[in-house]
Length: 247
Ligand code: PXP
Image (cartoon, rainbow, N blue to C red; front, side, top):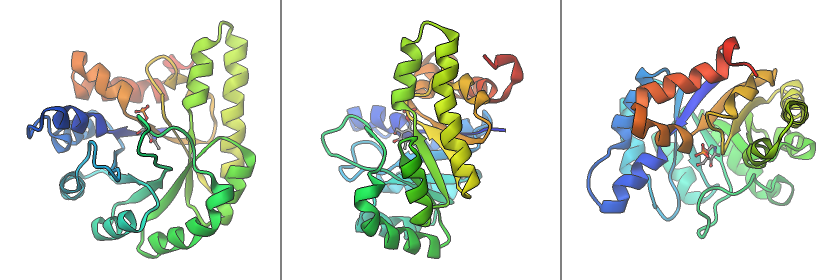
């Protein structure tokens, strides 16, 4: 089964747009849980543009499923992670000007900085996942750095899939994800996927043998406007796992 992690940042984005106390991302997380989400992801950005510190504490206290705390690898965020003690963290590169996370970590250039930080998080009992591009070298370096899991950045794959006109091209593109996941699995890393996944492409992950988790935000929150959150989560979970949706 592919676990579904729901990223609830966009609920906080709507709240922050008006400075009102609603909609509440914690309430959203509870509905996601009822819809079958396997974990909840939130990203506390340095600029606090959506999720606020109190949301993360409140999520940890409220939800029964694991919390995946997405964060830049800064001292401030490590301190917060150690206080909150989430099930896991996903380390991402963070640029102030970006609209959303734009690519995987440059593990080759930043390994010396990341390695001790990963060790400190793991010493606190937190599972560490690195958000990387689906490339062999990045997978191997992630294992060397001591990560427990990698989340493959699927942004480029999603764009390429939507531009594909032929099924065989989609199969070939998805084989690249399968290759990266198989390598991760072989060297002892969990393989997660995320960014840009939606209701027209997520079902292709059924072809990725070692896919363990998909983290999806924007598409689920957008669909929830029309169907409600519980149903949007249920439908996505089916696309990821029900053989009837296998392309
Ligand atoms: N995974 C990571 C590491 C991300 O940064 C994001 C975006 O916040 C997601 C998954 C979810 O991406 P999307 O909102 O496109 O589903």
